[in-house]
Amino acid sequence: MSPDQQAAPVGIFDSGVGGLSVMREVRRLLPAEDLIYVADSQHVPYGNKSAEFILGRSRRLTEFLREKGCKAIVIACNTATVAAAATLRAECPGLPIIGMEPAVKPAVAASKRGIVGVLATVGTLQSAQFAALLDKFAASVRVVTQPAPGLVECVEAGALTSPATRQLVERFVQPLIDAGVDVIVLGCTHYPFLRPLIQEITGPEITLIDTGAAVARQLANRLQETSLPHEPSHRGWEKFHTTGPLAATRSALAVLWPGPAEVLPASCV
Image 1 (cartoon, rainbow, N blue to C red):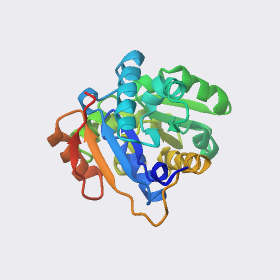
Image 2 (tube, rainbow, N blue to C red):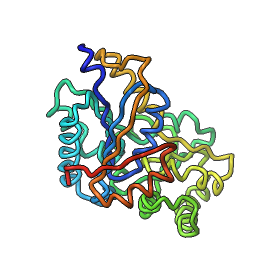
Image 3 (cartoon, one colour):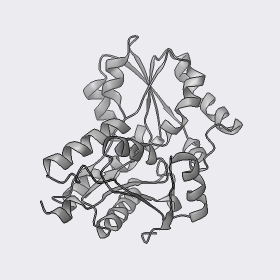
Image 4 (cartoon, one colour):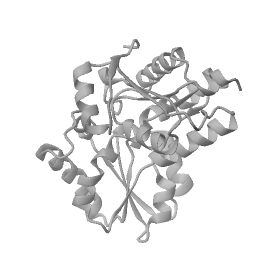
């Protein structure tokens, strides 16, 4: 591969700012890579949207990132992965597209009681792909699912510890505790930002699992396979775009991203 291709950025998109939890893991593992993040905040959340709508948005966001010259794209959203990953890979041959799915397999392996909880959006829990995950990896355990409407909006607002957020988390997590789970899958990229609050409510005896680090490892593997990793001596930069109000995204980034973060409008509204 040419030096220009190696030096190209990696694109990351989500319905809003939740995918920053994945970008955080990518930055930790791949400090040399330049990263472009686009939040489709005008249309957040995706969890209550149709598959056709999410596919259309995912195509537009992918086009935006390709126009920016991205050498690989991470779909940092479980719901968008379900709706769009297969189609985007078929439509963009040669472009590494890394999606994500709820961490059912590692959760099953980690469970000692054989009761696993999954906290996710309605769209993810009702998908055929999630059902296939359960069939493939969870036959030996009991899986308790819990949709969590409203939590995405709390994270979008940067309200990680507010009384209203705590009330919602308690409402959604308590049924899982009552069911006897010893592992909870955080099945939406927004939810890792609520990990401290969720863990406070569950107590340390319940393990929380998400897939951000696994997605970062998969990206690293794909970049190696395609000879696209950046020169290791390079210090990677980040750029942020949003389809929604700039002020709201800037406010969220001030809470969710550990560093300076200029936000620009995205031309894929």
